[in-house]
Amino acid sequence: MLPPEVDLIRFATHGEYQLRGQLQSDPILQPPAAEPGAASLGQRGKILQWFRTTPRLQITTQAEIVGQIDLLRGLVTGATTRYMDAAAIPESRANPLTIDPRWLYFELLRKIGRLRIGLQPVHQGLGLLFDDGDHPTLFGDYQRGDSAVQGQFTLRPGGRTGQVALWASGGAIFRDSWARLTEGDLAWQGMAGLTLGAETNQVGAWGALRSQRRREEARAVEHPLLERLDAQILDVHGRFATKAPGANVYLFGEGEVALLRGELQEYRSEPQRLLSWGTVLRLGIAHEAGAREERFADAVVSVAWGNASGDNNPQDGTARRFAMHPNHNVGLVLFDHLLHVQTARAATLARSIPAQERPPGFALYPTNGGVAGATYFNPTLVLRPGSRLDLKIGWVIAQATADLVDLYRLLGSGQRTNHLGGAPSQRNLGIELDGGLEWRYPLDFDMSLQLGVQAGVLFPGEAFENVMGAALAPQGLVISRVGFQY
Image 1 (tube, rainbow, N blue to C red):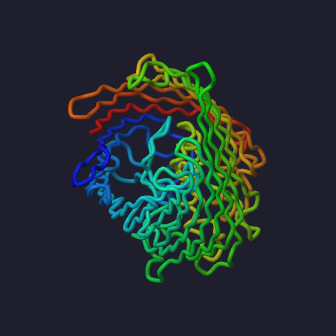
Image 2: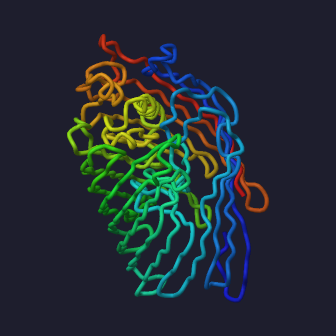
Image 3: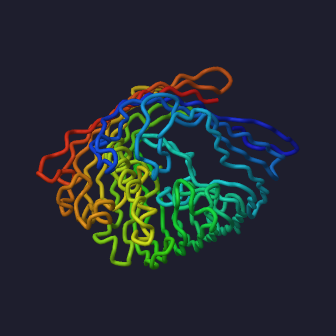
């Protein structure tokens, strides 16, 4: 996208079309009592797609109007899932024509600040809690993203190139991990923060106050969420990148810490205290090749660590499990696939239990692919023989930070077991190996073609043993990737 120019009004649109073919293991799951044969996800292969376009009207250097919409997003064909209604994207039926409006906002630009009004993305820090669904990750893909109908003002006392930024925002959440306006959730959120430094070297902190309610007439919808949530959030984040003296080597790092506290309540249940925290940290080294405009990182080594607090007892009146945003992708199999479908199946079956017997945290039980109640260690290596080709590998070693308790079994029969009926005190989640290849080919008119493949295999740990102590078989996933960007 070209930068705005004085005395020039410019309209442009950029976007992408992405197609994915996926083959995956069909993990063993708790079946419903009425259908004991449904003891797995029921889905081994699928084809997904989305088309995203981002039109932008630049009004000189003073203002712009920005929109973004996803078309054709969803499951094109392949096997559908069963008993996954509690998931944010259940894939229980093919729906390739889904339309997903994401952004439409007006932005006024001045030397000392920026004012943004309308439906706009919400992305803070490294995306640990709020992610706009527009930041590609090393493995996996972004899903949906957070947005709000709000106003946001950013003040830069030192001008546009100043090193200090003060900002504040407030309005109604359109969609995020906790609320969806289209399904009856009325969530109001105010945020304020401070950032010191430039884009590549900065530190920042922000806080948020949130009040969420659900309309009385909306309680009977297919995907009920919390009736009431009052929360306070405190977050600190930072990143750096510096060149080593006398070498084409860069050291970089980033990190974020978030704390949540408050109170949540579901319909006709007692209020529950909310207290959870999460941390991510990444350090790495990149070697630079090429010259001037042709420079690129031909080798990147990094190590990431993350920790999300867990909850040993969901029924003790305090919800302690922290869930990172689903777009904070760590590997391909453990969090994005296995734990995602296990928690969604358990929450779906738990809907048969009377509402007053379910703990308030029940509505937030499905992880939707995010890291929840777990800690992980994730080294990665990216090699680029040329600027158009990426070769990447990664490892994930993970453990639960609390007993892994199946919520449906706990509420339905009082049994404290994992999702396969085994001992919940076993916290070793296993070891995962991931690999991928991506090739980019530039086309005319600033367009490009992307081809690639990603694959992962998980060797489950003792946290996935069944009641007999037998280990869960290795779980795998392969994704073919075709993309077109313009």
